[in-house]
Image 1 (cartoon, protein in one colour):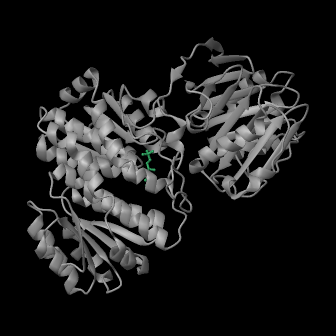
Image 2: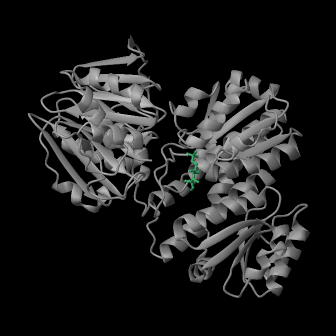
Image 3: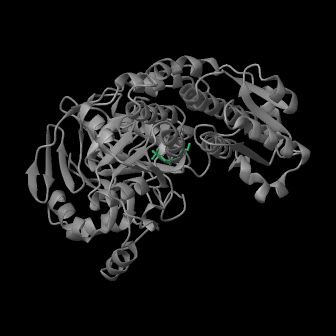
Length: 579
Ligand code: M6R
């Protein structure tokens, strides 16, 4: 859950690396470091975020370099544990994303051989192994090291006196940017967008030997060709564009991310796969998992297709027969648990589909087919526009299975999404920002919407929030209701309405204040609730979206009121690449 960058070419490497790490900060931000090679190896490392200003003091020489922004795994976030890690002689440096599972054994062995470890990181074992095997050629030393490593890695290695970067990948991503007599390397596309739209995705097992004018990629010792692909994201998409935070910008981009994903449609071969499925299993984590739960409710209601929605992290513990379509849903396409679940499905010969926002991501390489969401780059750790784009992709599947019954609904949904963006949530925000705990409740598809609302609230405001099926609250959580515990209730018209209103009354009877989301003009609800937030009276599919958006805004404004670090909530990273 770290970010790595590399640069080799004609520019001064330091500013390229610093800028690249700033773009990768959402992957980890507890410490950072860079190393360059001119005639000698120079290293600069600091704790804290690269945006805190300390990076500006780095003036390393050389036009070849590597960098890293860290989210601590092995070892506390200290300068010593920050990457790059260097060998005993200070001649070789590496940056690494991933986890070396046999690190303790390797370290013991290396220390017996006389290597001195400075840090507590698993990464340091890699650089000492390379040093141990170095016999005049860095590529050979890396190749001799890789078979000894168990676990996941994407690493970049440089060595003094050499304008050369060696990159190696196994289960953690590396993408290379191709410039004019220069190359870039990074954990994902973000740092590359400033310089080039031509990229090469390394595959697991690839080793790249990069010099300013030449790139050679090897797999299993053989030289291989990897295609240059064109990226359709642009650098403007990665800027805040006048908003205070990326999260707010991305919330406001949701009409577009929904619309673009619908507009892109579904390729014919993916359509066939979706139509052929007798049942559908979905795997995902976090916010993406919530979209799969929403899908389950909607697809079973509208298309009568059996759906299983499983957390990626729990999937391996279910041994139920699996012989039908498995869909992995992930914004980043790099979430380890989701990838592992999809690999399990492949091992059982199930057809597999990836729904992801990131072209070329690991998930797209594992799955048989991909349905790309069109959210554009999402920078804030909190998933917002990717959630909406996932729902767009999933709702298209429902529409497909229902022979286009929702064409009209889906092609206009972005307008209703736009309608709730400017809601005044002041009273609700005041209530939530005074609270230590909050509950979010809903029924049917609004139950996972409530779970998502609660996740957003706790993730960025640190107010403890739980999403509950409204009928479950009385089976225990009622004991926690007090006048200081707001309950957010989603009460939309239809079969859930009357029972939701009863649930709201039960909550009120326990003296907990209720923030109710209901359709515009619902006087009954407005009278019962302490605070009423109207959403447009639209189709169920659209209400799911508008209710979700209001809850994102509630979390956002609450977090702002509490002075939280909106785009980089504590202890979290955007891309979770460990189990
Ligand atoms: O990239 P993914 O969609 O696979 O990420 C899964 C979760 O880590 C992610 O949805 C997380 O829960 C959100 N950032 C929360 O806002």
